[in-house]
Length: 163
Ligand SMILES: [Zn+2]
Image 1 (cartoon, rainbow, N blue to C red):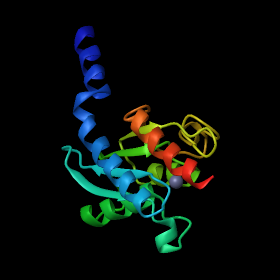
Image 2: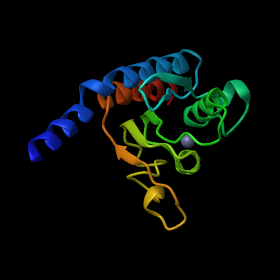
Image 3: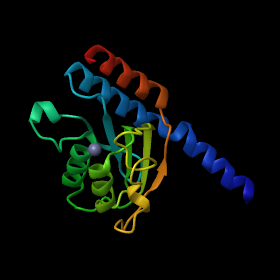
Image 4: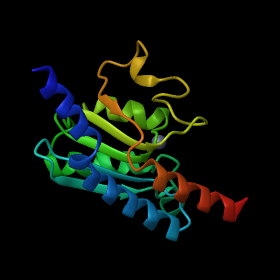
C-alpha cells in the first residue's frame, strides 16, 4: 500500500500533468507576444480535459483584474454552467497573487499546479499564504515547480527587455 502511494505522488509530479502545464506555457508565450506579463493558465475538468485556457490581458482589457487565473475561472464556470468548479484542477505558470488565490478558493478548485514562485506578489507559498489563512474556507492541494524553468525564463526575458 505504501508503495502505491509513492507511485501516485511520483505520477502527480511528472507525466500526467505535463500536458496542461505545457498548454499554460503556450498561453504565457502568447501573452508575451502581446506585451502582457507572460502568465498562462489552464483549467481541467475532473476527468482531465482542458476546459479553459487564458493568459494575462490586463493591458488589452484595461482591467487590473484580468489576470490569467481570473479569466480562466470565468471561462470554466461559464462552460460548466456553475459557479463551483469542484473537482477541477488549475495550472498556472506563476504563483497566484492574493486576488487570484481568493478567487481559486471561492471556485472550489481541487488542485493548483504552478510553475515559477513569485516572492514579490505570490500568495501561496510566499507573502500572506492565503490558503493557510483563517479567512480561507476552501484550500486546494498545491503543487509548485511545474514547468518552472520555462516559466521563469519567459518572465526573465520579458522583464529584461523592459527594464
Ligand atoms: Zn493574480
